[in-house]
Image 1 (tube, rainbow, N blue to C red):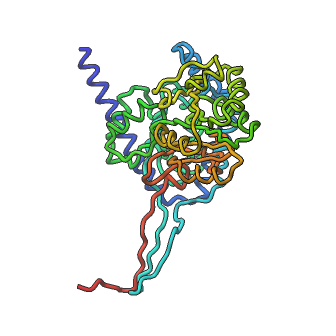
Image 2 (image 1 turned 90 degrees about the vertical axis):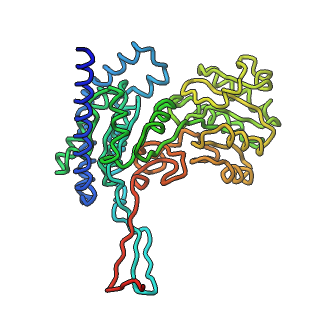
Image 3 (image 1 turned 120 degrees about the vertical axis):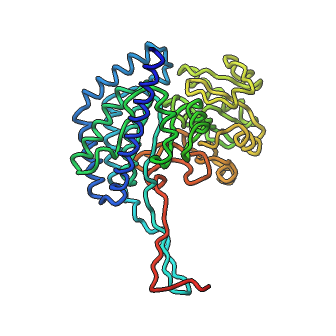
Length: 429
């Protein structure tokens, strides 16, 4: 009987997911030609609902936080999950900022005329139906839903079990915004179960889903790459570096390194490895590491680092390849710019890497030669964020080379088509 019941449940979930896909496809057809005014109204109304329902959102988040503490999640993971009034306001403001962005749909990227009189234009169009699979950060519900809507896409959201109650409460606000604006409520749908089987089903829905965007840890991304029958737009890890060049300003070195690691250690833009030039390690590292250690950050260093700071633990080869998402920092001394660039290109994940220096020539070489989606001079790696880039929000940071790289915002959620206008031309035999 148990096996029969499980089979019935699987069949029911499969039918449920198929219905979600069909509704999304129908909504996508409407959104593809929806006027900007309607989309922007939906975004602003959703923002208003977020503010109006702050108490309900906090109550839902409290359920998730209690469950997460019971499961022993780390402090950094709890921070990713937590909502407060400030973060809810940031979500609402993010939706309003997306509404203020130009509508990318219909934007003409290029136009030219052929000798035979044909006029050809390359025009932005939506991707269609976007499936977003994410883990513990409930704000992704608002960011992903809002960005997909602005770009004329339908979205199927599958949030993690950790943020289930929070994400449902946020999703309800998005749906209300769609309803008020006269747009299909199926434009932003949420998978209503936490069953991991639903992820596998979503990854096979190639007839109704056009792109999958996973946002989470290594195990999630690897599963998506292994199982998806749908194109994937993702990053595998955020192994980000901050490099203190021999001409780094000491005050900037301390402030930038501390912010890059400790502002929010659990986000993908947090620095995981610190590199420092050997010529200045004796003077730069003591104040940098002292501030980190005082704040509770564990340091894992090479032999030189441990000689300078005895409280540091010994780093292993694996530390250079690890995304901690926690208050742990790997630290290595390098012999100059060339070795720093080589280390980043060897061990990094092509996400975000920064150099701290007053030497503009060295900075420009770093920005040119480091093979990452985002490269930064004299600022924290935690600026790796679509909102900070003026994109309103982001679904994630893409580290691949096809279609999109860096923050995935409104423009990155579109593709293009060619519009050809003629006057009776036929192609010669």
